[in-house]
Length: 191
Image (cartoon, rainbow, N blue to C red; front, side):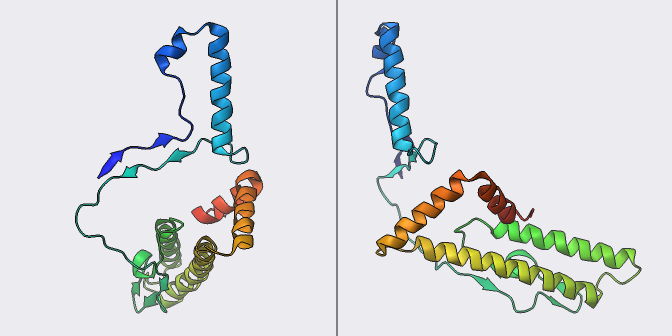
């Protein structure tokens, strides 16, 4: 049960009514100070407003947990059968890439089936299915390795120098547009 929804980290100290009753120059000063406090709370490096998550006041029922896992089928294809999406690979939702990988599977398999058909071959042709398997297993393996590395980095709790290095790396990624764009392209499969 959520007690209340997300809140801004830097709430105004003055009520809206009181702010409106102030002379204009004091309203301007208040506005500037509120924007400054938002910047401080957001972190000058992050350049965005931070929202606190909602508070949980009570848990109704049993709490369940599921191990975070990365799994990949040894073979994606067999005679006239191809595994795609979660049937071929399962990753934990840390980076939210399960859907993107599944869509990449569909895109690649459709390309292989169209190639088979346009070349006059049977759409279940083993050569094209093997090409699908080879291409997708390579790409999924790289994604899984990256996601596993992220999981390892964010699982650090006591290695303070590594935690600082992680924070520095995340701030670097967040503030260097070409790096951020390249990582986003890789994550969406458009690289």
